[in-house]
Amino acid sequence: MSLDIPDQVRKTVIADGNESWLDELPAVVDSLAQEWSLIIGSSLAGGHAALVVEVTLADGSPAVLKIGVPGRDVGHEATVMRLANGDGCARLLREDLGRQALLLERLGAPMYDIVADPATRLTLLCEVALRLWRPIDPEIDLPTGAKLAEQYADRLPTLWEQAGRPCSPATVADALECMHRRRVAHDDRSAVLVHGDIHEMNALQASDGSYKLIDPAGLRAEPACDLGTIVRSNPGLGDDLRARTDQLASGTGVDATAIWEWGTIHRVFSGVYACSIGFQPFGNLLLAEADRLTS
Image (cartoon, rainbow, N blue to C red; front, side):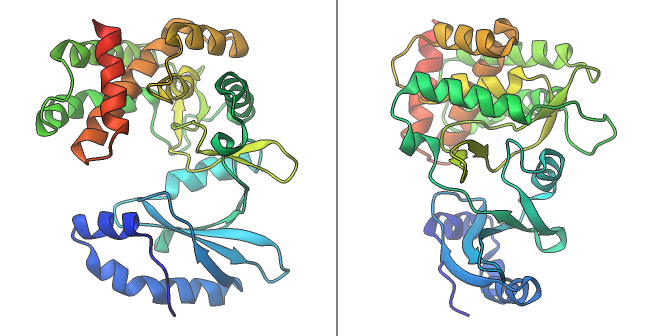
């Protein structure tokens, strides 16, 4: 079958030395289409870690087929969606983890394209986060916020060097201190299911006008971990990030210090990583803000 593979997905796969996956992909999509009775539509651009294709189910309803690129395990994403069961996250319709394939409900446009006012988006993101968060059994196979902070702390210094030291040493040191504090603060007894990357492009409009999240990383963590990504979002917007943090804390009842520290973690690590892969101007904007806040 003929399959349109977005350039960013193709570049990611080739850069990782997995060109054979591209050759095999049409046959994988075709076999899934036959097994799940799908009519294959257009590929969706925007991401780099998965092929995402519009499909139509046998009953005529719209859906999305998502296939993770090599090295991208969609297992945690599937776990989050199973636990959420359509509340706060896109509904999972079918899965084939052997082929890294998920069949999901199709949602509408992202919040960023629909809601112009940043303050309103902040409130809406809080609402969708609150819908997703729920107690989670420690036995469920999802990484913890403590593990994420530990992994970031292990990777950040090397990544910073590889990226050409794109921010000040003081900014890196500040982020590492925040990672240590959030790792120590983790408590399985109060941890909840969190998305891991909440922002306006990951919140899509559902048929009832509400918003649902896509692309969950999936963690057992304190809610502040999610709110920190909202603080990190929209670098260069020019608003007062302390006021943004206080608004998130007021709207959710989550500790403002924990939100601020996770915001610092996400801002610096995401900025350095973005610089290391040439994802600009996002990386430079994040780190310019991080340097300003540190100084």
